[in-house]
Image 1: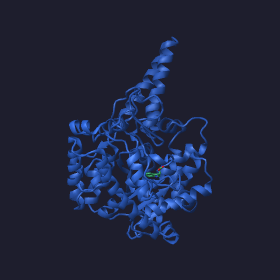
Image 2: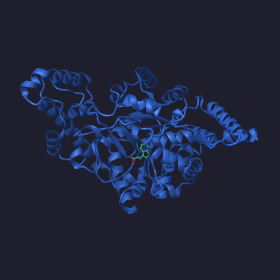
Image 3: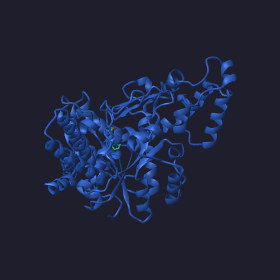
Image 4: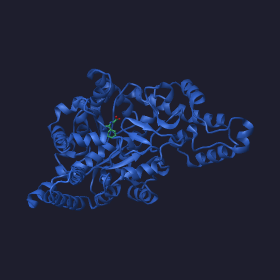
Length: 473
Ligand code: TRP
């Protein structure tokens, strides 16, 4: 009996094991409370010990009640989040702190690793390029297994990049560009294939939107993504509604993931309830599947084990914690990850920008005048109430949204440092800081609009056609 039990346990994921131990612990407690016969209690206790042992062998961690395995810490189930903790999941970002989410705490809670100076230096050595300012300034701040990607890369083993976007509307804002700007840099310095998933199916399931509309937004958003400058010979963009039906390799990976994740697990990870439609419940498998190279046989020549690296905002991590938990059980490498912070709303860093509130965002379609008005009117200021006070005490860059935006978009490190000092000392006023931001954003958005104009329907079609890319596998 013990043998067959152990054999069954081997096929379980850390999270499933965790749940089994918890269940068994509850059973033991109930038996004891109900004053059950001694041999019955003893048998249940033996089973509990055996489960705990399997848990330890599988995860390398001791079982701790209420503390799920480190690689898959539950969020958004209302029980693990403490009162004063920031709320971060694929649908919500909320904190009471004006400086924004406490990202160091998030690293501990999510069990990821900090992108430290050592790692940044290693990226510089491996690529021979100055690290992107998003790395230097901690905008991409957390990772999973990036060192493995670099080990492989240094040994001339290739990998590929995977990122995505949920096309919720036609209107993209500057915050949406962050992962794409960074992914473009990664593609350039590592020279690897890139796949971009447009989850029009996700938006259809979550929003009040027809499938046709969702697909249309996917193609419109693809134009903004292409305008970031991706290499057409090295990039495949796909709409789920489109590609899923044409790719047996992709669908096979989806059902493999679906078979290895229970309803209970997605409830724990994503907070689904009994009244959520079954489309939502199975969607995480669709976002997981592009992490496996066999989903793209045309690019990888049918090879199954090409390592994947996913740059994304930290709120997408739950999907990939799930993916990494499943990967070894379906014989696939775990995808590595690079996580970015959120892009703050104009009103302040307590929440991220939202495309549904026009005043919270600078849109890629805004005119120079709109940009100027929005920044002047809505960008939360860390300055003082009066000029006299500001000169005397100085402004607070930690909460000042204009300054935060400059850390994202002003590439010149020296200039940024000068502005910081001048603002903090009170020499520079809020209006003057805003002017610098306006003058940074206006040409940046105008250049984007110019590049987007060049992206014709024909170009979109080429990017979205399943095909071999400029790499041999
Ligand atoms: N769910 C993401 C969104 O709503 C889109 C997405 C799909 C994604 N696959 C991804 C984002 C991979 C980052 C990485 O925006």
